[in-house]
Length: 184
Length: 194
Image (tube, rainbow over all chains, first blue to last red):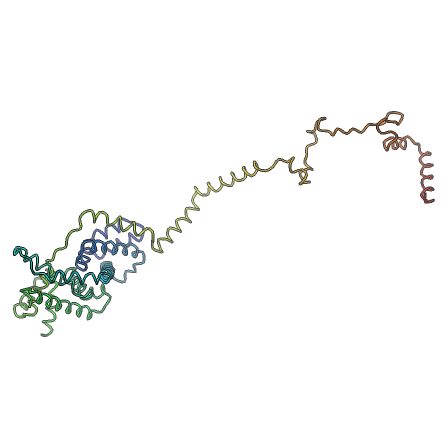
């Protein structure tokens, strides 16, 4: 039995009143949802809030889940929507944060260079527009293929490819501007 | 930049994640050796992939299902509300509520009879209740104090004098001839307009 079949069984059990089935689904996907939320928000507390909202929507939406798509795709659809809403709500704050972090490059400790480069890349990812960033996160971190990413994001496969390509180009440009050595 | 390039480029995310077969991995590696653009992109994706995510802690994971349920309960989904309503209806048909309803009805009947005013208070208002009074229960003391004195053997009473009671006794003492004579006298008196 593969994971998708197992998900369907758990969904069926939950809809029959078995609350433990929801716990099993949550246990299976909570860390992936949290990681996606963290990469989208780059903030621990926001990521926790987003994770809770996602599973609240799952809990409330499962009775009406029609299973047109797999549970995993449906879960990512919810995750995408909650994450993008979260990002939109704090956009102004995000810009200020970006500027403060990107004006740096002044860390005196050479032993922290790698850590700093990672922080730059994280900040660079944060500067990529929400849907483009989500395309990268789903493709790179979550391992969704183009078709699954399109379904989760509610757009065409062509749009996913475009979002992903634009995100990669933007990241390259930001890292080059910030003096990242390996990406020209 | 042809179809192979596009295909290899599409495989890069899976390549950096290690999510492709050994054969595809080999083909991607060969492509990267000859394509600077894809090599730069693969380096970028590798750097992205190793970005760590801080663990929120065991407390968060343990509290998550509880928090989700506590937030969900005030606004249960529609189907759940219908399920709760159906459960309520079913509970009405279960033995316990039925016996409770019967007990309540009995209690209402008992209290209504206890709280009903005594029959003596109902007598002036309810003639139907008067008809069921048990006169056998009455004693001498219950009789009205007003006495009707019967005339003595001579037809005279100090209280009543020659009242109606004496008058009737006199009629009762008349024989047939006397009654016929009296009737004739009364008829003549009526005819005469007396």
